[in-house]
Length: 292
Image 1 (cartoon, rainbow, N blue to C red):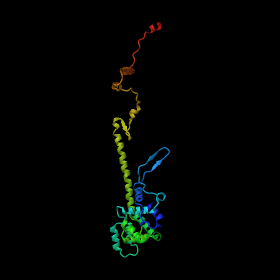
Image 2 (image 1 turned 120 degrees about the vertical axis):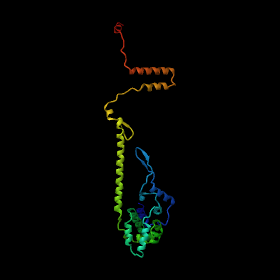
Image 3 (image 1 turned 180 degrees about the horizontal axis):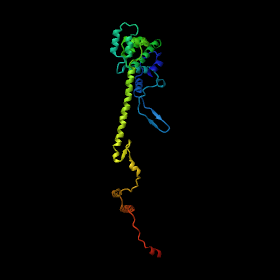
Image 4 (image 1 turned 60 degrees about the vertical axis):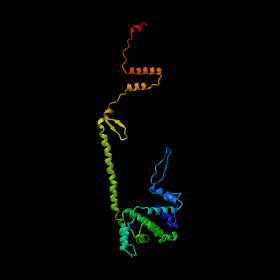
């Protein structure tokens, strides 16, 4: 998206890559691309704040607060300088220059070495040099002639002057396809397959662990809650009264109770205890009750 924005907005901008942008704004946009930003998502029922996430790509055309294209141009140059590896190895450039010194058109050796690059390097170098070549075609408006382009991009891209001239001035004839793309795609497919097999091994472990607990008659679920076994579910469990020692301990721990309250509580306990034992038959004289 950065390259598309610069192609659309910057090709006719005079002083692009020579006029620096605001340092504060450059850091802001660098953080937007590197770290993302907090986004508030609101709905009719709830509002929540998500954690910082990398936006990966930002549609710069929709950003209302982006007022100066030199900010994006300076950020792009800084990104090129901070690349950890060389896009086009220096040793390869030196060999091409030694073997093709004095060439007037793009050497075949340069084309072949470009095609041997890894797909990441190949397409990145393809896109960057396409942008610079487009800037050169609009040099009458943006005042970025070939000399200015060399000053701005050769150091940060680490490209020698011999190869740089063909990549910019004869860009269309430098590219004949990436020969290593098929090989890298095969390796990537293997990497995509490996996590699925590992996750299958991991999923087998919890089931084995759960089966090891079946000896005690309970199966433990993934959430940590235990469920009764089949044998326990087949026989309904009758409600049981709470244990007596628990009630007695509760009464004994209440030291602050008054004697009246304590005696009343003891009667209630005895009454409850009486409920747990069968009642004896009442000895009532029926003849006496009738006469009365």
